[in-house]
Image (cartoon, rainbow, N blue to C red; front, side):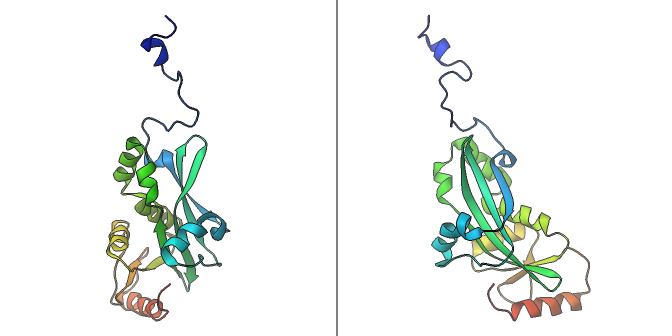
Length: 185
């Protein structure tokens, strides 16, 4: 019978083209890319949290979320700039409104990877693994995310560091002090 429930619910039958996958991993749903024009892609997201445009100098990482086969959204952003033989990362922001729009399977995938912010920072740190990375942290949630990807406290309040190579403690302290003297970044 054409209209029977068995016919209507066959795999793929009557499924919308933009339907989200029934089950997915974070790796299937998220991509982190270095971009040239952060303002175009993540400017609105950045401005919502920081009340201004993202920095206009390199380096920008944007996390994209694939909501469905033809729908991709900007899910997060972080800015990194070179400083001596290290990087300064700041401006970490995610679009937390996306969580409310995600199907349950996608939210579960985000939980399993530690969330969008953690995924973005992990991918960013992997790309910058050749250098020490510093972050200027303004809230407890960001601090938890950074700790989960290997950052630790320094002697300079809001400045956290992820050391990627062995350095004497005196060299670490001196570099962290120079970074802290820059103020928020």
